[in-house]
Amino acid sequence: MDQTLTGFVASVNGESHLRVEHDFGGGFVRLRTSEAERRQAAQDIRNSESIVLELLRNSRDAHASRIYVAMSREGDKRQLVVVDNGDGIPKDMHDHVFEPRVTSKLDTSHMDAWGMHGRGMALYSIRVNAQDARVADSAPSLGCSIRVETNVKDLPERKDQSSFPTFELAESGSVNVRGPKNILRTTCEFAIESRDSCAVYIGSPVEIAASLYAYGLSALSAIDRAFCKDAFQLPLVKRLAATADPESFSEVASAMGLDVSPRSARRIIDGELDGLEPILERVSIVRHGQNQPRRNGKAPRMEDARSFKLAKEDAAHLAATVSEAFSDIAQRYYLEEGVEPSIRSSKHRILISIPIVKRP
Image (tube, rainbow, N blue to C red):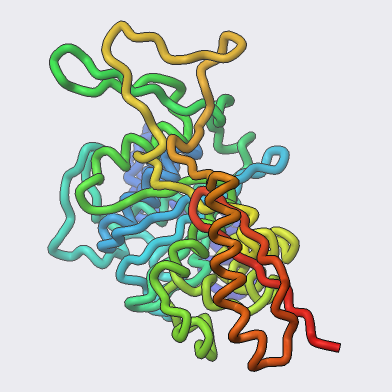
C-alpha cells in the first residue's frame, strides 16, 4: 500500500489533483505548470516532419556545420537519427536535456523562420510525443547523435515520403518550393534557410553511414586511421572511418543509433556504397513555367545530380601505371610482379585493388 500523502490523495481523488493548482468551481481550474507544459509539448510536435525540423534546429544552434539525417520506417514504426558535429552534450546531461525548460541557450534564444527557439522545450516536446527519444551518443566537442522512434498511428506523417520537392525560380527572382510537405521537403527548406552555416545530408541509415565514412576518410589521414586505438574518442562524424572491419563498423554505427549490418558495412568499406551529397547539391531549379522532367506521369524522385565514371582506356592506363609501381614493392616482399590491379570507380572514389600472390 502506498503510504505517501500523494498516494493517499490519488487513491481518493484519482490523478486530477496532480494536474490542478486551483479549482475555481463551475468547471474552471488553473493547471499546474507541469500539466500546462505537457499539453503545450503535445501541441508543439504534430508529425514526423516537425520532429525532424526541431532536431535540425537543435543541431544548428549547437554550432554544427555538418548535419546528417537518417530516416527509415518498418510498418508503423518510424526511426529518425540526427548526427552532427556540433558542441555536444555532457554524458550527465543526456537525459536532462529532455526535461522541460532545460536549455544551453540562456542568453542566445532567438527567432528564426519557424518561431522562437531556445525555450528548452523542443526535446521535451519530442519525448512527450515519441515512443522513444534518447541521446545515442554525445560528448563535448565530439558532436551529438539523437535517435527518435515514433508510431505513425499515434504521430502521423505525410503518406508520400519519397517525392523530392521541386524548386521553381519565379520571375521576381525568389525560389518557390513545391511538393508534399514531407520529411524531404522539411529538410530542404531548413537547408536553404541555414545554407550559410551548415550542410545537411539525408538518406537511409546505410546511406548516412556511408556518407559519414566518406567524410571520415577525407578528414582523417591514413596514419590517424591506422593508429587510432579507440574510434569512440573521435568526433562522431569521423569515427566510422577509423574502424578496422565490418563488425567494428557495425558496432560503432549502432552506438550512434544507426542500424547497419556487417554485410552493409562491408559494402561501404569496399566502396560499393557511396556517400551522399549535401541535400542542396541534389536539387535542380527550373524557371517559372518550365516543366519538370517526368517519368510515367510522376515527378522524379530524389537523385544525385553528380556522377563519375572512369573511361575504359583511362582505367587501363591507371592499372598499367599501378602495376609498374607495384613491381618494385613486389620484389622486396617476394611477391609476384605480374598481377593485374582491379580498378573500380564510383561517385566519390576510385578503388584500386592489387591481389597479393606469393612466389612459389
